[in-house]
Image 1 (cartoon, rainbow, N blue to C red):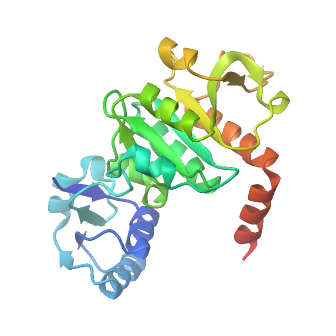
Image 2 (tube, one colour):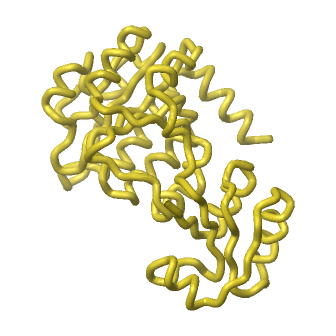
Length: 253
């Protein structure tokens, strides 16, 4: 089934990664579109000119801005068995993110963007009650979905059990949990984020080693889940200082 990636930055990231395949569709060769056409040809991705009506038909609400990347399947590393993906992580300060019931594609895309920025080693989602990679996810993530390793699991509890076997501590994000700065987040860390409104499901919560929260001083009940995920991922990497230092050096290059 074909999927459509829109947004200049998302398309550029996808093409630059070399793993997009598919066809680049455009209506007029001008400005940034010309750059993307040249990049596609450099990566041996077929290019086809179509009219705006065709792009409007393929992409709702005219978000395409005159260009779309059509791929045969969603990008990312979903298709690997989650057990193999976990075993392949050979780091003392590994970081795995588990998403329990994140169904909104905008939140999912924003979380993937943070996962890329904080070098998350693996993102695990469930086969049910989870957002799937769409053009909205790709656009919201600004192309980060291309780089973040992902696997789909039939049951998050099974994934948690496998992570524990591999030496991970499991931290579930919960408003009543211990404040993140007060916890020791070094070593192998697996962070569970629940859906907005309902949070982490009871059985998942019971299988966590710790419940973790973000100290806040505002008047509303809670943070958006994608914002909370970004803050907690940063706190883990802050405590794993060697990892954060390497990330900083990479950003300066």
